[in-house]
Length: 497
Image 1 (cartoon, rainbow, N blue to C red):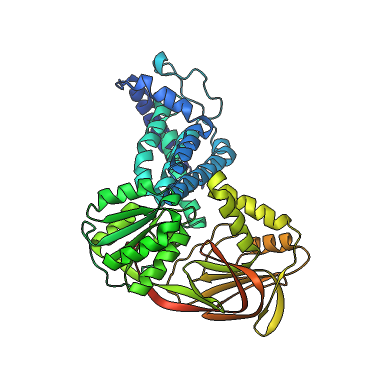
Image 2: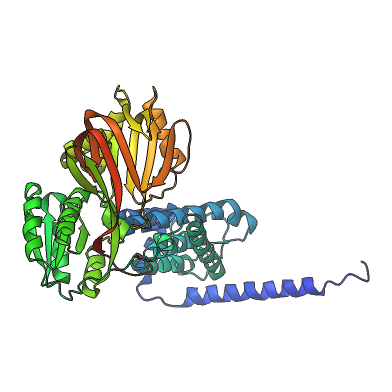
């Protein structure tokens, strides 16, 4: 051995590791000797239920069943975090440190699992999955995270309680799980990270108990539960429930006596309310109650709690609206307007949605549109006659990634988001290529541009035009423009949705 070789640091590190392992073993033995009141009936079962992530998949399904966008996002983020943590544990973690499982002698038989794991001990995969799921959920929805956290903590504790892991295995697994959740957030930002400061702020009445709010609710949208919850939150608000064919008349009557016009329904119902609010110069309160609810969700109003908060404190912004003018009149759109194959999809969806539900009806409409034998729409755009499969115009710029649904972070940007899918012999391939490539690419198949006005000419008579889920027919010339900051709408003025 070389006299210059100093092994002191190496020996010091080994001694420190031995002390840590000794402490770990002593804590494990203390946990085995400690009486956990009532735990023998709960923790072993809970530990088994988390095998292969079954507990967390069931929890995610229950969250998604609540039918709120925030819950669905939290469930998906939790599962994505769990998946990353499990992949890391099984490919790197277990193979890097081949630590033996604890000896079960100190652990009472009633606590031990009937089937003992055969993989190495470090780190704990159950703890990693529990922490990853809980952290992922909490990053998207703190309320759901608070509900899931005690269960995740109990699963992690159960691994020491049943004797299958040392405490350090559990701590390392939990740390890895939390790290996986934050890595997923870095790759796919949460809605809170993408959220922009609400602007431009507007003056609107603060109705502490809802006095002066008249809310028109479309019964066909299945709004009963939300309307009931809003009544509890704002007891002095007046709520008018009506059938779809009565919505227009109910909105006109409500506007005559309201300080604030409210609406609960889908995007088509909200569109009708926006026209009435503009005509009467009233602020609009939107409670989502339909299938898609793009406008309400882009505002940051996902349920009655969000809306009640904004109304109580007089929190509102001014938003843009899109307007289209044809030879037969004019209309308003808050979300999107389109010509080509999409109006037919809307017609099929509306025909079947009351029988099979909105999303299945939308899928059915898309399949029928893609399979149909048709010719592209021909319009004159920018002085040139062009065949088109789809002309999409958004009121505000839509952001999306690949095939994910679009959303807007700024409802007062002054822009029309125009996207075109050019005509060809293969509409399905071009439409799918445009969806995969995203909105900001240009190719022979599709293109995108942002403008503040647009004019189409030589539109064939009877051409279907869809706007905010409604369908009409147009011909000749169609002019589109943005109405900047035209409408005052309540929304919670906070940094996170």
